[in-house]
Length: 205
Image (cartoon, rainbow, N blue to C red; front, top):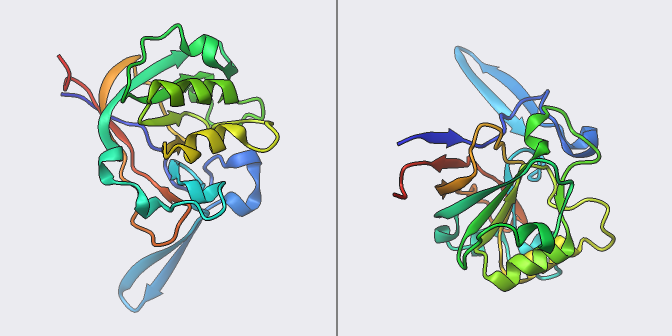
């Protein structure tokens, strides 16, 4: 059995969406006598995280409305190393099955800085995965879509109750089938939550 850690490390120097200062986490050490503690200040969409419908949809459901089974599930890592816009045509080249939690591995995984022309999932790609019955979608970018007016990719997936995992690190993960474990933090009323995501190999024969 092999375990791949596909989570970003939280630090004050980590890459954040569009390099926005307000997205950067703060790790604030505190001394209380002989006791050392650290306070973390972080946007819920920083690093590896899951989006819930409330992120984009008025009156949408929160992270706690997702059943935990959504995040302990068989998944497929699909590699698109040369593709910046992943649409239905690109996804049709892969053997995706109903119920797959699909993780998109792109050139994003090769960079340790935020790239403004990052690879993303287009609206027609999201519609295709929705119609196939994908159980969840993840990508190795800090956003699943780029420069799409109205955020249709998010709305298609989240509107169908499909969790969106962003900020994955898939550089060292070969294309194939795995068991995904990506439990979000239990935060009441939240539209997103940080995730420690791992893939387990050798579960499937």
